[in-house]
Length: 250
Image 1 (cartoon, one colour):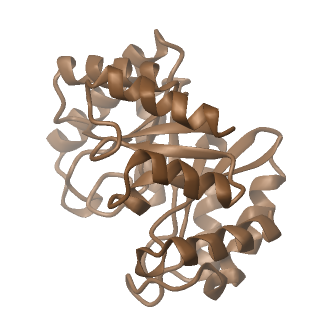
Image 2 (tube, helix red, strand yellow):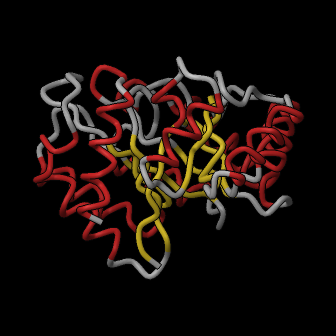
């Protein structure tokens, strides 16, 4: 089905929803992952429906509800609120975080709590036909591939998936190895160009990584999201250039 391009709304936390939609539409993108911190606060269903309508009016799709729920540290009321917000937003998936402790520092209790929390979230979301997808991120239990796959297998929920993004300072070959290992469960890739460390560059600066990543995503029979995030200087102008490069590589 190919690669669906889009924007992660937290890239432009400083802009109101209307302007975020306009930036994405003008850049020729197909979808937006709406963040739960500023643009679509948890539990505000009226706002979520408004954001959904604005997105659709501009010919865009909602890729996900980018929540900040930390599995293992979420009560059932928050879970229900996240599912209701995602439904109002028309989001096919909810992005969550796998706890707040990295793999190297996590004890058995930490892993058990995150695994149980992911299972509860996935079960609750399944009733609404929604996926749960884990952010692939440092200082969580998805900070490396083996731990991520262990979580996916231990939970065993068919609607539990994962994101991927290039870890800071990992070279291209290692990034591609990670991507391949996670491919059976992959729903979304966050696309950005940081090097070295968290220095933000134009996307083209890491063309050697992103061209093969996008080629690999395109080879899958299902649709996978490639969502732009964290552009240099938080600049809409740079974002437009990055989006043009992304489209030229897809």
